[in-house]
Length: 490
Image 1: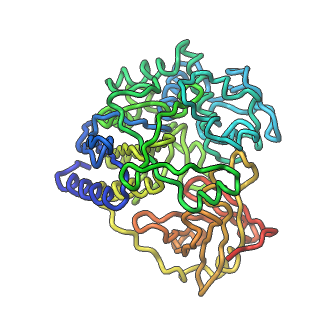
Image 2 (image 1 turned 120 degrees about the vertical axis):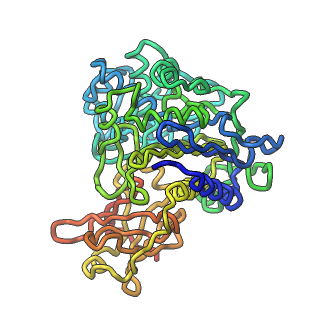
Image 3 (image 1 turned 135 degrees about the horizontal axis):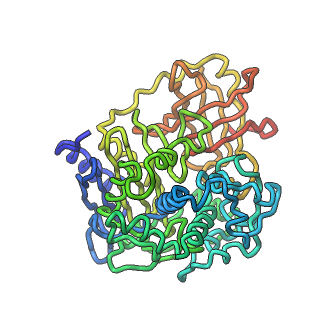
């Protein structure tokens, strides 16, 4: 749909309100309409201490959006017949060894790694769980991929058993692409992405730059401090720049940067988004791009799923795809493409903070002029579901592949009260509990959670043939199974 002056005013108003309410250091917003950057504006500060204002043409560390560029480069090699999605990682990078209950890695194909179902976890081995930051980030430039895996990779589960976001898998994919091309992954992205699209202010050098915004972060909350104390991890109190935002330091992505080291600007990312709206024009074949944004891993058709390096979702009744990115110490980014409207939203925020997702939700709703959701009555629930759903649920096995789930929510308990279902998590934003609302009268197992006035979370029940509720699924591709041996806490 064409982007109008009233659309621009609505996005601008939402951005200004979010800056005041959420209090990040600053952010820039871009809207692509068709092939044009139709809106670009900065809000707040690029550097608080000097008073430097945010601006769309300033550089941002875009984090894991980098993965989509690596994925496109790999798929271009597939187009050229130089790689296949069925290629095995043990053949392409034989120096890295795999071990554990999930096997020796011989069944891991490139397609598994692109969709985050390889079985590779948050870090390479259980021993590294004690200090995750040094396993993924470095104070000095680090292009040594093999240095990430001195003791190989522990696989807790076999490929295609479960979805688990894996930075290390994309570090390996970057090495695969680099070896196939005979150049560094930074040079590959220049050849395949930045050069053809005219992205002259983008690179994967992973170095401080005069035009890079200053990164800030927030102090850990009370719950994070309690979690760290139980884990024996000290938390240092840091001074703030403005009473809220703490100046971060530049840390490098380990292993070559393919997992998230690109720097870019809003105008450059608009060129990238325009190419995605043109089905990967100039990078891969249109049919290849369609495959990349198709359902590569989609265990539930109504919830968020994953393509070949892109996430996929339905938001405000529109199909979307894209990716987010977070960089330790101070940067968060988001790219959301809405192909049916010929629109894309770019958000570059120089703050790593808990409510970045809320910023994205506000801006997307304003862009699409989406009304607040009208949730069904929580008591309009199938009687069989009300009887069968209560219980405790936990993630499928694996500490390495469950690290984020354990830190963000832990276990989930569903309980019945006054003819409705309530959901409580052990930790995180759902700890205080929210009510489930039926999301579709034709699907009694799909619910909205009244946790957000703009875009409520979605929850789906898994059922056995006899009607028993055996698990829960969430939009973040989290799958939990019933744990009857665990006592509820609500």
